Image (tube, rainbow, N blue to C red):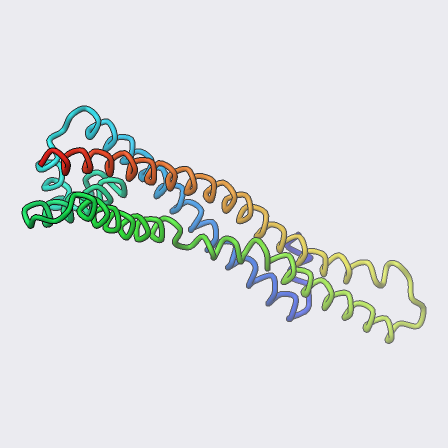
Length: 218
C-alpha cells in the first residue's frame, strides 16, 4: 500500500493527502462529539432527578446561574424560564402572559443549547457526502495518467497499465475510508441529538404546566 502511494502521480498524492487530513479532522470531531453528547445526557439525567425529587426552584435556579455548568443544557433551559417568570411575577401581569413569556424564554434557550450540540455536525455530513467524489477524482486522474503513459509503450499489456490503475484506486479507497466513519457517526449523533431535543421539549412542557399552576394560585 505504501509503495502504491509513493509511486502515484503528484495530483493523486495531493488528493490522498487531502483525504487523510480530512479523515483525521473528522475523527477528532467524532471523539469530541461523543464526549459532548455523553456529558449532555448525563447532566440532563442528573438535573431531572434533582428537579423531580423536590428541589427548591429558587435555590436550583441560583445554583445554575452561579455555577454555569450545573444542570447542563436542561438546567439552562429551566433557569431561563424561571428567571423570566420571577421577573414578571410581581408586576400584576396576567398568568397566561407570564407563562407564555417564560415559555418563549425557554424556547430561546433551547434553541441556543441545540445549536451548540449540533456544532460540527455539518462537517461530518460534508465529509461523508463529498469524500467519495474527491477520491473518485483522484482515481480518474490516475487512470487517465496510466492510459496516457501507454502512448510511450510499443506494445500495451496488462503489466503496463495495471500498476497505474492500482495506484489510482487507492484514492477511491481513501475516500471511502474518510466517508464511512463520518456517515456512521453523523447518523448516530443526529439520533442522539433528536432524543435530547425531545427530552428538553418534554421538560419545557412539564415545567410550563408547573408555572401555570403557580401563577393561578398567586
